[in-house]
Amino acid sequence: MNKNNVVMFAASVGGHYKEMMGLRNLFPLYDSILVTDNKAVANQPEIRDEFRSVEFANAMSDRRERMAGNIEKGTRWTAVNAYLKMFIQCVRIIRKYKPAVIISTGSYIAVPLFWCGKFYGAKLIFIESNAMVFSKTLTGKLVGWLSDKVIVQWPEMLKVYPKAEYWGVLN
Image 1 (cartoon, rainbow, N blue to C red):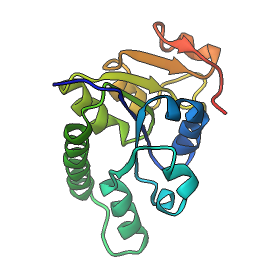
Image 2: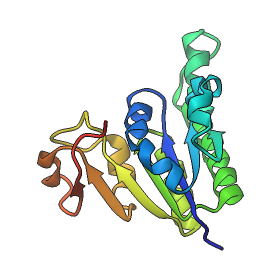
Image 3: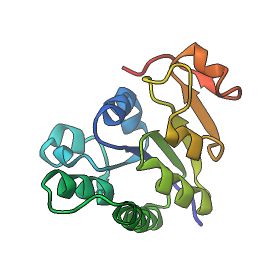
Image 4: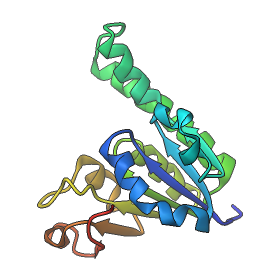
């Protein structure tokens, strides 16, 4: 796969997305792509303008919305189905942009994106949530070992991730 200057920044809606915005100074330095399920970004031209493109991997967030509206009953199989759909979305996004690097602050969007990215040869950087001070998130357990670099936001987390780098809290 031909590598380029594409860096994907991936984060799910909420605190993970807010933490990703703490890296805003990096966006203009690369051919940056944002991968998110945060539909509000579509109405934020000031954010969209910072990226070459914004891609939505939103199968899980769509499922959450259907469950909240009592349109769909939440079962393990509907969760697995939504996750498989998101995995397919992530494969398409990876193949479209062929990123050299994928950076994620989590949550569930990181897992399929990192697994696909690793298969296609991208370097992976996982930033553990600043909400975690003494233990790994589920996302960290699933992608931390796969990542080329893990960054933690609290010095105590260096005991949990011995090979991680401590950068302090993202603002």
